[in-house]
Length: 292
Image (cartoon, rainbow, N blue to C red; front, side):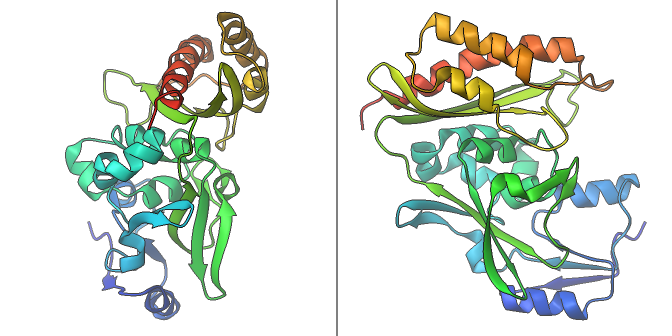
């Protein structure tokens, strides 16, 4: 089976966009390509005439501090993100999530950009970026632009990115005193690629009060969303058993889980969501209380 006709290497964003214009269509940008190539092989995605490899664009391979922001290039392998002391320090939720993507060989090739661009509502890396309130940086003929992470999705597996738009990377604020984050998930033992349920939390505490919090479950709808009403139960209140009880009740009333024949019933997901909420919020809370 022929997956592509022409494979091109781009060494700059300008070169990549120009290559896209001149390439025989259909054409796709790739970095890791672990999702795309497998889907083409399995017949769930049409074959491509041209693939444009972005791995040689230095900007997309960077992982660094930029002023008050952390920048993760879209082509950085997820294994590098998982093992990065910088990410463990400032966004443990991202380190934990990327460490659960595929197996070791996949993580050496897969990228956070591909995880997000694939637009699945339970993608681990993407869910962690929602908790971090990340901003996506893109590039096209009109130059650079920025979009909030939740603006990138229009449906299950459907990205809001234009075909000729390159996802360059992601940025989010550096960790400040009193902040912490965490991620966890539940998988089927048979190894189905996507989780039954995953959960990401970022919070900021002040003394014994949750000053601010971001909560995301995946999947909880056709596109990733934050559990805003669950967040409101915590925000401005002490982290107590009563608060956690109210938050669990709010999950049942406001978060939308559905039954999946391949993974789990909605009822089971509601059960897991309550357990994950208590576990992950407490981990993030404890991390937020750690001294520098």
